[in-house]
Amino acid sequence: MKRKKKINWTAILFVAPNFIGFVIFILLPVLFSFVVSFTDFNIYKGFGGTKFVGLENYMNMFKDSWFIAALSNNMKFTVGTIPIVIGLSIVIATILNDKVYGKNAMRVLIFIPYISSVVAISVIWTMLYNPSQGVINQVLRGIGIQNTPGWLGSTTWALPAIMIVSIWAGIGYNTIVYMAGLQGIDKSLYEAAEIDGANALQSFFRVTVPMLRSTTFFLLITNIIGSFQVFGMVNIMTGGGPGTSTTVMAQYIYIAGFRYNKMGYAAAMAWFLLGLILMVTLVQWKVQNRFEKSM
Image 1 (cartoon, rainbow, N blue to C red):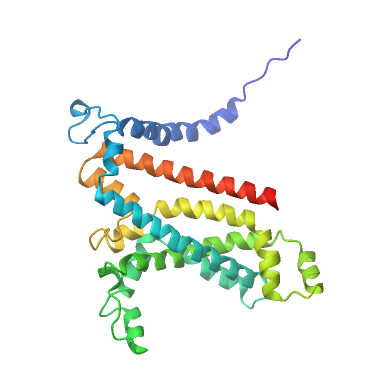
Image 2 (image 1 turned 60 degrees about the vertical axis):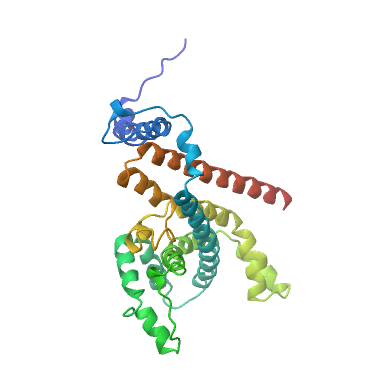
């Protein structure tokens, strides 16, 4: 005889609140945004004044100079921050993994910017970047540089200034992850490299870096996703200006949806951004698989 499977109602009751919350606050809004992306939905007009426009929102994106600028800035932000964050993090993690005085205190100090409020970080760095009274330009003048950058008020320097803050804030998380990865490397590999005559630098590039490739791949994906979702720093420090020099995708989606009430257009841009992130992730996944097979 077949035994009847008992339903574990206790487990279902524990899971149900989280599942219901996921459906109501995540799944349904995501599906709603997909439907809205094919309409000219406006909050103030409501559903009664909504028209189906098909792919018009998606086609208009590539005619929109503001959208092109935001996409370009996001690309610059991603390419300009991630290699530096990854590179510095693996070096710092390697140093802290060895016998360094005050190792635990250093870990905490490095990690604090990552867990700090984006608002607090943005406000403090905005003051530091002040062209006339900011500490950064005062230090530059003190070492003889009179023609100091305008930083957040300059179309040339505003985006690099935000990128510097993002790098500073993101190093802590990446360093901690790399330190966890370093714990899984067999010490005998370093001993064998030392016996073969490898110095510390050679051991780093021939042992540490290759053995951390899975960790690096994970951090690359998470950092790329994070870089395309950057919003808080830009919105607080520059508001997307001067002009469109620091406008990024997430901020432009917010502006289109909540400032100009073009919810359909904003939803279309959000889905385009999702597709772009998904495509980049899949490309990375393919490259990673081919690389591992060739090893």
